[in-house]
Structures are given as C-alpha cells and as structure tokens.
Amino acid sequence: MTLSKPLKYALVVLGVYVAATLYLRFGSHEGWGKALLISLFCTPVVLLWWWVRDRLMDRARRAGERHRLRAAAPRSRG
Image (tube, rainbow, N blue to C red):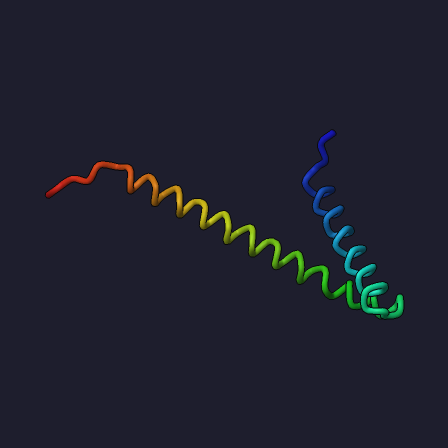
C-alpha cells in the first residue's frame, strides 16, 4: 500500500506533534494544555530542521559524486 505525498506529510506532522506532546506531558511533567501549546509551536521548527538536514545531506551527496567523477576523469596536460 502506497500513500500519497500529502498524506505522508500529514502523518509525519501528526506523529511529531503527538510525540512532542507526550514527551512534554510525561517527561517534563507539564500540564496537558501547556504541553499541547508548546508542541504546536515546536512541530514546525522540528520539520524545518528535518528539511534543512535532508537538503544539506543531499547537496553533500551530489558534491561527493561530482568530486569522484572529477577525480576519476583523466586530466589533460595543456
């Protein structure tokens, strides 16, 4: 079973929100209201960090591929 991209994204957002809420409620001993409110603000920040990390890792992978291609290519003396 494959899920559409928007549905996958919605499930990730919901999962991050629920995980943050439960962590704040039971890990930090905050009340439910405060945990829900803090999680509402933390979720977009976590998703932004995730996107930035994926983008940087992809750029590093492509740079490594370009470097390996240039290193493997014969150099001309001219």
